[in-house]
Length: 156
Image (cartoon, rainbow, N blue to C red; front, top):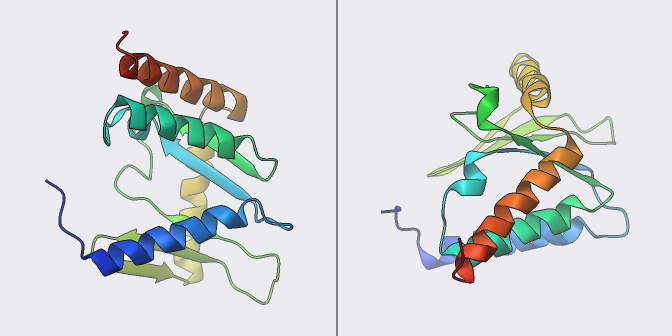
């Protein structure tokens, strides 16, 4: 069972995520490079139709020119982000320092120390080496989504 989150906090998180999603299609959208562990494509959250819709949404966003989605397959073995998720934020304006943002169960962490940022850069390099290429990743997501679509339609 998942821990209970109060309705206000949930609404705030959903609202913030919707705003971030809209930024991806803005006039001057940010660049988004993302790595997904294969497990997130298989772990059921909801029923098969929800999983199919989620895969379709990832493919839709992954088709944007400013977005790259890459899957880290099970075959890649252990990788440096297995025990956590993080967002590495880099800004065009050099006066704004890079930062790592980690959303936790009971709050958020912002990492700014250069030595810590270097470790996260190394982790990203390792993830890039382990991940499928962009086209192969989107194909993998498409096939996984199709399996869920068939399950939702009552076929296997």
